Length: 310
Image (cartoon, rainbow, N blue to C red; front, side, top):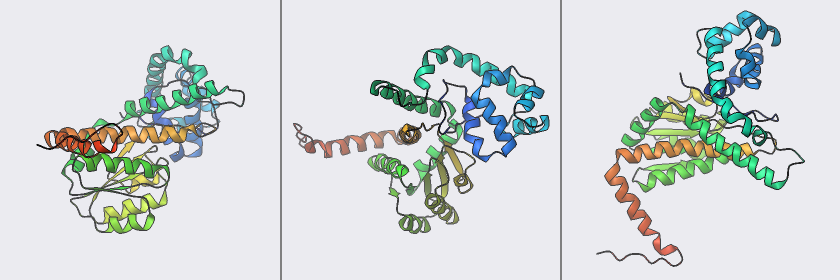
């Protein structure tokens, strides 16, 4: 069972947790209000939930046992017993790392020294990368790699911070000979998507999964028959409806939005995995292309002269 993540606004960042809690975070916005209360209780204290009966949890969340069971089914568990066992197992594995990191994992406070701020941001960013890698669905990743490797053209859509991620992805693919374009203007995204074909792939990048421009471009690409891929933190967000395949990240925001950096790092982790997978499948050509492009810019660096071609 693949697990993912969600961002928690304004509250303390808890110590490292298991993949089930990471997945519940990612699904929180898509749940019904009563199920959200159950989810939040698990996010806040998974060990306590693992030790609670279904009656106790339902009472704590001011809901019914039927809602708890429905919640379990929603997150792909057979029932509450399976959820409790999984939470207990994951909590035990995470406990070893948790105590030493608890203070570092806390949200930034007005009294923190600048050195402490640096430590907390670095911790949050590193954890976003680690949790993204831990929950990434390798089967979906492999399919995306195969499709991009065989694609005639790859369109990459992203606005705001995600536009920088799309541009980075385009530069990587272009360097190994993949025809790719990164677009961030809403009109150009749509017009580019409108001329795609079933031989092409379109990738939409949106942390929230709710960016209208990116969703519309991905939907237009899908109407033209292109394979569509979404990279988002929330697998049940609106962008997933326009995507044939979804790759998820695991990043959270803190009060001062260091999570904005975390979300980009998580997205960059995913595109690096895709890029390296594509490069592996085009190994000889990719190595030659990387060496050729590296040589092309040698003369633009101070103290380096381009090598003469034989």
